[in-house]
Length: 160
Image 1 (spheres, one colour):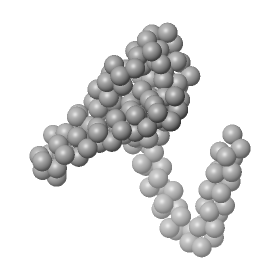
Image 2 (cartoon, one colour; image 1 turned 135 degrees about the vertical axis):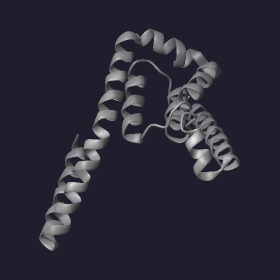
Image 3 (cartoon, helix red, strand yellow; image 1 turned 180 degrees about the vertical axis):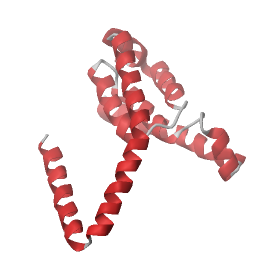
Image 4 (spheres, rainbow, N blue to C red; image 1 turned 45 degrees about the vertical axis):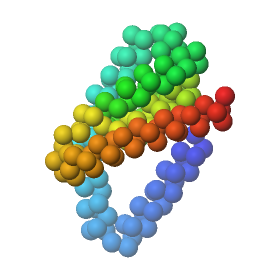
């Protein structure tokens, strides 16, 4: 809570400094950021609603059975598959990870889920292939999965 207050205070100070230096640029930047926020808001609300509904339907014991301490490698496999479906931004993934841990999920499983959610995207693979080429898209996604699994292994060894 204190760190959040500090971050908001620093952001406010920088905003005031920017406004003093150049009012027009600051106003334009605030307008642009507001438009970007408005564009992201429906997706953010939809994902928050989805997470809320999922957590209402899935009990902590069910979450624990799938990706809890006892799930082991199978839980890591489930988390890898689930996280690889779509790319999700970090500002959504981190609160989701915390909520999963609070509801009984294990750290390695949540680590691989969060990592793959942010770095692997099979849903966006066709767009990535068109933009960067097929071999690059497959290599990037494969290396992201390998790094996510390595990250989960490190978390498992260090935190267990």
